[in-house]
Every structure is written in C-alpha cells, then in structure tokens.
Image 1 (cartoon, one colour):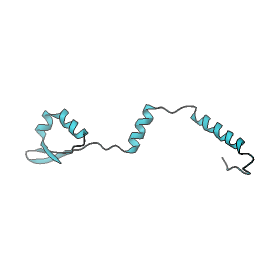
Image 2 (cartoon, one colour):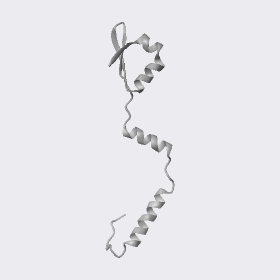
Image 3 (cartoon, rainbow, N blue to C red):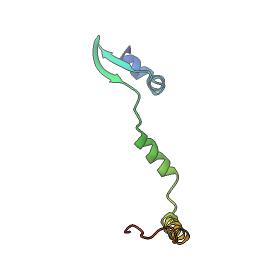
Image 4 (cartoon, rainbow, N blue to C red):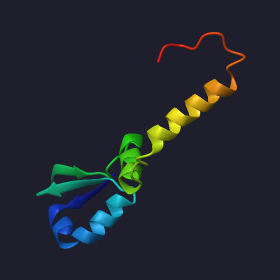
Length: 87
C-alpha cells in the first residue's frame, strides 16, 4: 500500500481517484501520521445483478408465459403422469 500526503490527495484528487479505481490502495497521511485509507469499492454479485435489472426491466408478460408453458406441459404429458403436485 502506497502512502500519500493529504496535500497530495487534495491537489491531485482526480488522478488519485483514477489510481484507486484501478485497484490501488492508498494510506493518506497528515503531518506524518496515518489518517485514512482509500481503497477501491468492492462490488458484490448482488450489486452487479441489481445493475443488470435496472438496465433491463422485467417483461410484464413473463408470468403469463410461464403459466402457459406449465399448462402445455401438463397437456403434453397427461398420459404419463397420474397425479400432479399441488399448485
């Protein structure tokens, strides 16, 4: 982890953010004492999934499509199945 002064961060904030965004972790010092750490934000798979869902809204007819598929499968396999599970 690289150590940088608070003054350096203040004067070069955009560049420092770029470094952190690219994976660099920084220890920020003031008057020779550590005061903070800057690290890349960790993204979970849930964050990425939420991002995908925000870009691609759900299909309002999806539930109807599933119900139709279940109905068609029951009709197709009616001779093979003697009892269907409860809905």
